[in-house]
Length: 67
Image (cartoon, rainbow, N blue to C red):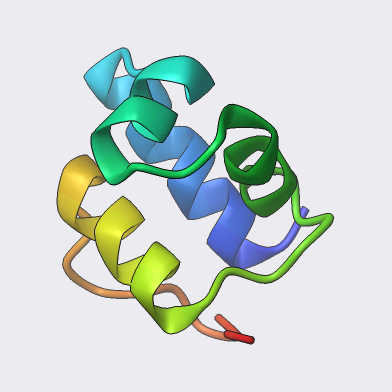
């Protein structure tokens, strides 16, 4: 699992947020959120920014990439 995926998973766990809840909060379909969170697809800069905002991630992990 990439550092980005680990950071997102840890933040989701700490905040008790599910994929469905994250999806709803950032306005992206749940399957897309799952692809991003599991590392199957790279987020756009907008998606990553929204995820970070919702999860309170202020320092992006090293190696994060965008489409």
